[in-house]
Image (cartoon, rainbow, N blue to C red; front, side):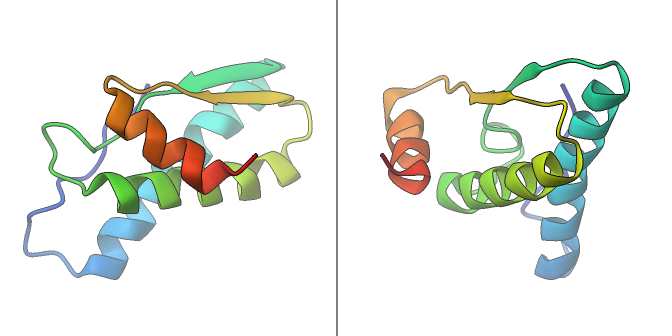
Length: 96
């Protein structure tokens, strides 16, 4: 697990997005270094840290896809969600 940057801060939006993306990349890199084949992420930042779920999901998915291309040992990433509404956002963005 990793800690997200807080969304409602005075930082520029692109900086916050870059920081959240780095959270995913760092975790995937660490998992690849350990030769792990699968890992799971919650909706990082979308709870107490105030990230809009749609923005958090888009960053999670794109960052994970990019990182998995570099670290081919990773075969599976699960996005686990606390609420059904969050899971619906992820499912819609991941597609069939």
